[in-house]
Length: 483
Ligand SMILES: [Zn+2]
Image (cartoon, rainbow, N blue to C red; front, side, top):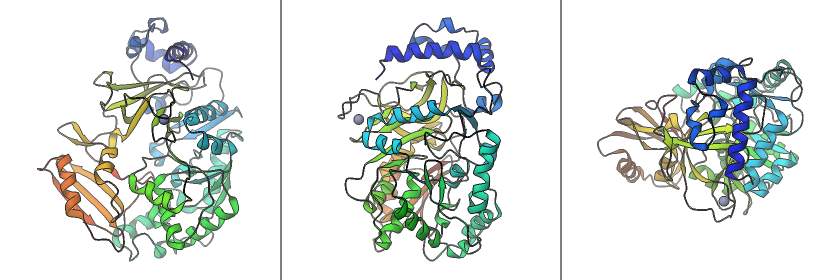
């Protein structure tokens, strides 16, 4: 493992390299009146104003690639963040570097890392991620050129999974019917599925593995797709499940209902926070002792943090210089802070002091696993924080802990709809007594007894526009909010 001094020295090199070779970054430094030689110790880093995805979106490609790199270089990996088409961020990086970052993050969990290296990955992820070819770090087959890569992804989706396009008519139909016609079975939506063509949504081979189909609106995924996914899974026998936790929890509930025993393999849960309920539902469907690791990744960077077998989340300090910032300074242990990262591997699109938009807390004590990389708690996206009077009162992770492992809940979604207004919708588990009043009490203890909090039992919950399923969303915490 690199020492903090080694990491800082590598970051100094990266800053000098980006200054020399990346036009947008040179201008960024000049605007701030700072030169690479001014960054002589870690305390000097804040002299470089942070960058963010808006900065990269504006500069792509010419401004944010190092000079001399062409988009058609076959060694490049083309990445697109999940989200709806107008919010997507396009990035390229050397495929080998991007894969190495992912493998480095997983050094804290040897079982997961082995599964990752074996490249028989089963993907079950939001349709927009699948469509965007950001599936995962399969090491081989970087795309020959951006046009064909995007085309291949798009045409594969178009041929086999018309639902995958968030703008598609099927999807709009699905959400419309979701809004107006809740289903008897809370999660099945056969009537909606019936409108899709007969060959829609088949499991399909992708580089490094198998992609299981899901509707853009996860809970609308029909029973036929589930059946086909389970059959494909039995034949495929993955080395690793690379999944969104909400997606695999959905499939795991179906497995448990059918008495289906999935092939054993480690589970890497990423794309969104893994809540307590989802984790329990997943592990209940898989063999005992299944390795499970929550991994935080960003399509433009690779994996930033991974959970070790002892349940500690470790920052990927092998591949990034990581800063936790709050109030314009370095955060103390326990403080809510944004992760800001600097790449240190001389890639073709260096990221210097890049704001991840994710909230963390540094954990002061060492992890019992013995790995030396910094231990953190991932609290969720900053834009999903529940806020009052400009302060975060509950993070998505804290909300999840406050809800806890309620056996009477199948799935839930909290939305902050106004300064003082919170709406908690849940799909109850069958055959369990509803204990919503107790939960309301717990939530109010955290949010404040004066808030307007409504709890309602529903038969259906929609996915976010990006296709991810978010348990906690806020209309109050704005995009770009700083901690
Ligand atoms: Zn650990």
